Amino acid sequence: MIATRGHPVSKNNDLIPVTGEGQLIVGDVLKIDAKSPKNNYRRVRVKHVLQEAGNEEIVLASRKVKNAYFITKMLADGSSWAGNVYRYPREGEQVE
Image 1 (cartoon, rainbow, N blue to C red):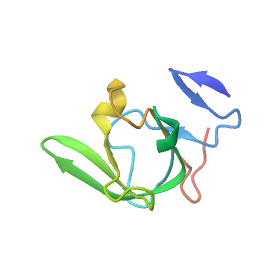
Image 2 (image 1 turned 180 degrees about the vertical axis):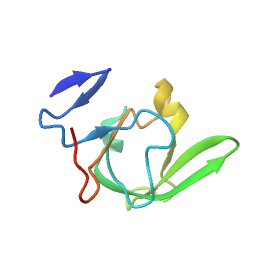
Image 3 (image 1 turned 90 degrees about the vertical axis):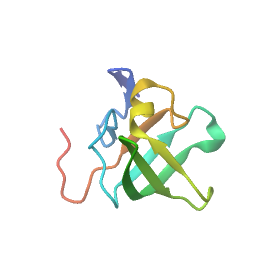
Image 4 (image 1 turned 45 degrees about the horizontal axis):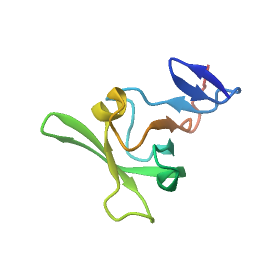
């Protein structure tokens, strides 16, 4: 693993760091390295992208937790439970 802007990414750049709002859409597949390892996700799908009280909320299609979500702004400022979030490339997407 190498570090880029404080976010570890794989050497072959197959994962894209999520660093702010507007980067995710319904159906995206994420890898979450949570602050607590018990909350990590190797692969979890985005179920909904909501705007609540001016904040983007990402709702996850999780089998582990009934109401799994994170607020993107909190992810960006480091206060989210999610720690580091990465998006797997979408079908046909070229990752540089």
